[in-house]
Each structure stands twice: as structure tokens, then as C-alpha cells.
Image 1: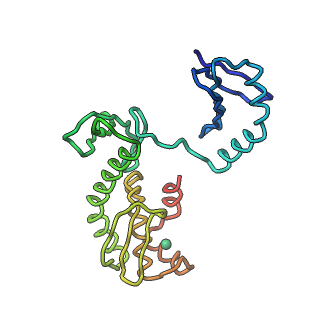
Image 2: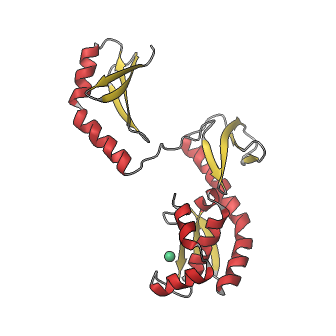
Image 3: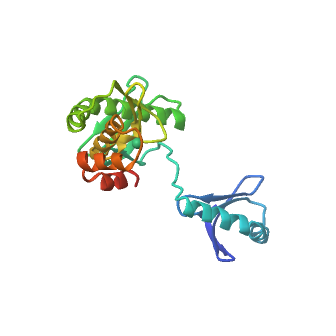
Length: 230
Ligand SMILES: [Zn+2]
């Protein structure tokens, strides 16, 4: 059955009839599109009444998506856009049981993800995350060398992991931890976060003194910070 578009009380609904038992209503990010999957036997009127009865809930959901800028969750499928060091790449899955690392085609801007026959979104995400971790580990020594010369402080070690913040510095043992997603951003962002964390070896908090240090060691840090959080 083809998809139909209905407008119900100013709400645009994409309706798809399928051989299913129940009706499903979904609000999809990033635009708050309304999608209804309905059983073949239901009349238009029943569907319209159903949507009408859910109007308040639909509007609430749409508002939530817009206000919180909810993005479409990544599915790690062919054709999806992914990033490496600030550049855009197209994801291409290749069925493979022997190669287990990501391959990059710079000229075609493709990230090849070799996957075994059976795979889940989570497994594909983990494979790509491991790749980002490797990329970070390759990039860190040079950035660390440069930034320690700028700030004049050296950490005890630098670790990479999945984390909520972009970076973290433990004052007690001078250990810096960096978010592996920095490998998705422009390399200048990694440099900025590194300088930020190294400055914590001088000033532990984000006080005025800390900001003066940032101004000194990374004059355009505010602009980079903005770009990092885009
Ligand atoms: Zn900080």
C-alpha cells in the first residue's frame, strides 16, 4: 500500500496501511513528523479519530523534540553521514568475517565498516567507536607534545574513553581523560580540550584565573568551544 498524507486538525500525518493488528503512532525527530501505521481493515474515520484523540500528546512530543533539538539517532547503515576529524564521510557497510577494522577512502570520503553476517546497531557502533579510539591514540602524542610546551605542564597519563564531557583532569594524580568523540571533530578541538585540561593542572576550577590562562594559551578558545558543541 502506498503512503498517504492526511491533514488532521493542522497536523500532517503520513499514513501507511499494513497487514498488522494494531495502530501505531510515532513522532519522529528531527522535525517532529507524525507517522501512523494502521491495519488494513481500519476505516479512514477511525484513523482520523484516533489521531484527534492523541492531538495533545502529539503537540507535546513535537514541542519536546524542537525545544531539546533531538536528532535522529544513528543507525549505522549504508549512506549515513559520519564524521572523522571534522570531515564528512558516507558510511558503507561491507560484509566481512575476516577484516575487523574500519577502512577509510579519503578521495571518495567513505568510511567502510566491515561487519560479520549477523550484526546489531550496537555492534556496528562499537566497531566504529573502537576506530575513533584508535584515531585518538594516534593523534594524541603530537598534540600532547605541542600543548605541554604551550602550557608548561605535563599530565601523568592521557586516557581515551566514552564519556559525557569532552575531557576531564584529575588533579590528585594529574591524569587527563579525553572523550573519544573528539575524533569526529576538527583537530583544533582536540588541541583546545587538551589545553583546557592542562590548564587544570595550574587552576583546578573554572575561575577567572582559569579563563585568563585559556586566553593566554589558546586565544580563540571561545570560538573553538562553540564549534565543538555545535
Ligand atoms: Zn574544565
